[in-house]
Image 1 (cartoon, rainbow over the protein chains, first blue to last red):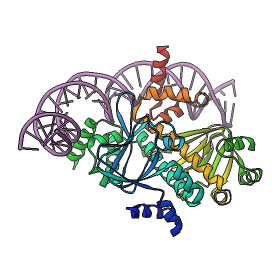
Image 2 (cartoon, rainbow over the protein chains, first blue to last red):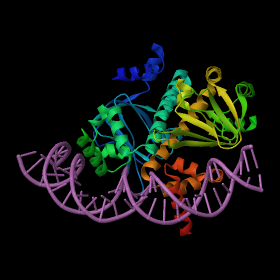
Image 3 (cartoon, chains in turn purple, green, cyan, brown):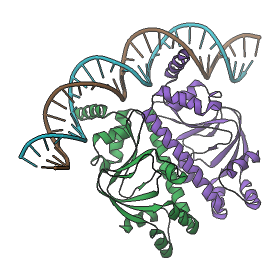
Image 4 (cartoon, rainbow over the protein chains, first blue to last red):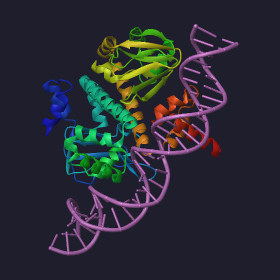
Length: 193
Length: 193
DNA sequence: TTGGTTTATTAAACTAGTTTAATGTTTTTG
DNA sequence: CAAAAACATTAAACTAGTTTAATAAACCAA
C-alpha cells in the first residue's frame, strides 16, 4: 500500500530512508465506498490524497446543473482541490469515488511540516504541480482547437485503461459534450471501421 | 524597472536585502519590438520572463493553421513555456510582443542556482505555479460550461485594461471562437443596451 | 500621401453539437 | 429475484458557432 506511494515519489526525487519514513508517517489511510464523496462543494478541502486503489472523478456543477469533469484519478494519481486546500477557501468542486477506493491522505498542517523539514518535498510538489499544469495547458489547447470526435479518439488512445472503467456519461462530461453526442460519435467511428 | 519585480515578489514572500540583491542580479533586461518573437515553435525556451512594460501573446498554431491563445501577459505578469523551459524540450508555442515591450529574463541555470541557494525562491515559484494552475482550471471549466457570449462578457469584466489593447482577432483566439462570431456577439450585446 | 495590409462588420449557407423524448439494456439494490 | 434506477442508443428539431466572401474603415510603410 505504502509501496505504490513510494514508487510514485521515487519517480521524482530520491529520499533517504529517514526522510522516507518521516514523510510516509504523515499520511492517513482511508477507504471510500463507491458513490461517496471525499469532498463536496462548499466544504474546505482538508487533504491532498494519493489514490492507492479505485477511481475518482473531480467535477464542478455549473449554473444550469451540468456536471463538468475536471479530471479523473485512478491508482497512482493525486487528488485535491488545490485552490481550496492551499487557500483554505470553500471549494467549488466535488470529489466522488466511482468505485470502492482506498487513499492515503495528508493534511495541510502535515504537508507544511514536510515543506519545512524535508526540503526535497517542496521540490516534489513543485515538480508535480508543474507537470499537472503542462498537461492542463495541452488539454486547454486541444479543447480550443479540436473537434469532440478527435478529442474522444485521443482520450481513448491516451487512457485506454480508464475508458473501460468509465460510463459514457462520465467521458462526455470530461470532453465537454452531451452523452447523446458522444453516442453519435461512437456510432460514426464504429461504422468507419 | 527592478521596482515592479520587487513588488511582484513581495506579494508572495519576503526576502532579506541580501537575498533580494542576489536574486535580482540573476535577471537580464531586454527590449522587444512589436511583432517580434521571444520564442518560436521548435525552439527550446531558455528563459522565464517578467514583463516590465508592454504586451505579449502566448499561442499555439494547430494542424489547420489556426492560432489558439493560451494567455496574454502585460506588465507584472510572468511569461515562459513552462514545459519547454523545465524539460528542455522543443516548444510548441510562440511568444510574440504585441506592443514594444521590456522584460527581465532569468535563465534555467540561474533559476536553478536560486532554487538551491535561496530556498524561499522555490516557494515563490511553487506558489506562483499553483495560482496559475488554479486560474487555468477555472478557465477550463468555463470553456466547458459557458457559451462564447458569456465568456466574452466575463473576459471584458475581468480584464478591462487588456481589452483596450487587444484586437478582436486576438480576443477571439483566446475565447476559442472565430472573429466573425465575436463580431456577432458584440453586435448582439450592443443592441441589448 | 498613396497604396498595401490588417481589421471589423455583415450576410448567407453550412456544420458541430444540443435538446427532448422514446426504447431497450444493464446494473443496482432491497 | 424482482423492481427500480442508471445507462446507451436513436431520431428529429433546433441552436451555437463556422465558413466564405464582400465591403468599408483604420493603419502602417515607403
